[in-house]
Length: 406
Image 1 (cartoon, rainbow, N blue to C red):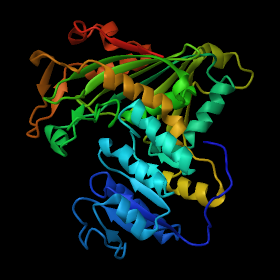
Image 2 (cartoon, rainbow, N blue to C red; image 1 turned 45 degrees about the vertical axis):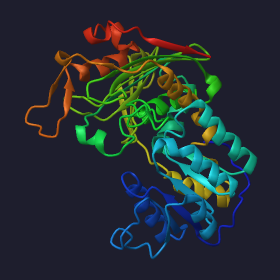
Image 3 (tube, one colour; image 1 turned 180 degrees about the vertical axis):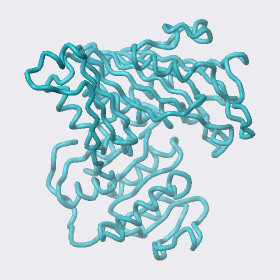
């Protein structure tokens, strides 16, 4: 969490909020705003969406002003806060519009599709003195600082590296849900809607956070291997290895073509054990090597399972603005993640997997594709910190991996 700062808005009345993008994942934000509105913390004053919401969709929200014009909506409502959950290429223009009006922002991930757009947002917010909180909900988990403390205390010995695994399944309809879905570019704009940069972006951001490598200068190099089984432009089965400034390795392996979808996780490898974080569940397991356990004077189990609470990010932003609480995910703390986005953006287009590398899920009429053996491959990459090509995946042998350095 960033350091606390003096509050900038009065806390006596609910903060007026505008939501940009109220469908898809935006429905979650709409419900979350409803929760905070009932608690007297915020007041929904406007919704920006190409198609106005119906009365049924707005049940419990009163009659907020609706307009497809974000800037005019901010002007008309006097909003103090905006939640932006819109297509990736629109993030920078909307963030700049908010900054020009002194409106603080909860910006969905990824914050920008390129380092240049990220810099535009950061510069505009700094000039305007507005707060930008990025929607990596996993980093609102109280497990993150607890894990960092354990690592610092030497609970698993010397950190050798960090791995992350995401084995999810998405059907063809997922890639048809919007014009920008599954695209690297659209209408001349960067989109970079790949498995590592959007659906499983939390795995990348959480791995970086647990390592303490969150700023852009904390990344020395990024290696990418990008593949696709679906007939899309972006990647759906990929891995990335990040070398941090101190020289540690972070490997994230992810797929949307798993046979059996599992909860994604991040594992910190230490000389004396491992620490695994299932970030969607706020669940942590500490596993120590037996010789270390037996050397202790007090008895201890080899495995320790812990559950943590989490702070909602919009609530965190409200607390920041009214009470000076530090932000869990300020924009600057996603600089390292944006370096990964930039590496994916500038890498060669993802390689189409050969037809014999995948199959359609049995009995699945939705067109879900399964890459043979990818479930185990993803887990092994997180365990060994190796890339797919280094693990012997036949379809990963031909294209060379790409690397970007600072």
